[in-house]
View 1 (tube, helix red, strand yellow):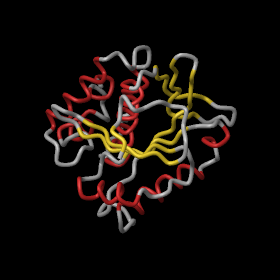
View 2 (cartoon, rainbow, N blue to C red):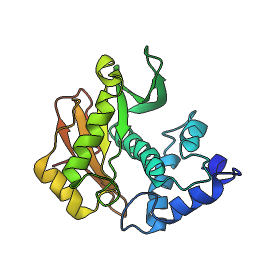
View 3 (tube, rainbow, N blue to C red):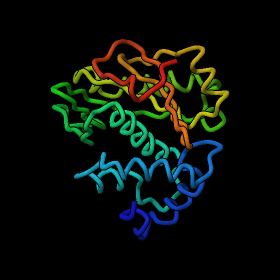
Length: 212
């Protein structure tokens, strides 16, 4: 993150974000930073470090939603890496757009696009499951790039607290696009990612997530 932390415009806002748990609710900053330090130390972003660091942004304003969305991409990359996939960020497609990742392993590849719902209280949605549904559907409707490129939608609910996430798990809301992996990552000594799947995907993620 040094390109951002040392920038003229983004240093203070990025530091504030990282000091307050980096998007994980009710999480000590050191725990969150240890989680991301372990991730980047795994060399998952070799050759793409600047691309991923610059996603955190260099805005003078503290845009928490955008920063959390950025870290959602890091969470998604960890899932793919732990499942045995190499990840390449910012994949250009025929429409002229870029999607978040190409995941590759043993001749199997899949395009992955990540979205991160904002918890209730910070958005118009009245329930966590509505937040998931609306955020996923908005991503699915924006140009049809996922459908046209046989992509997998990752819906990162890591901003949700335990109670909100349990509501999502109990109801398993639709996502507009399928396949979709809806998940929540919690850092710590025994960091864990729980997830459920809408549709069917050729990605094999059982080594990286606990299905619920």
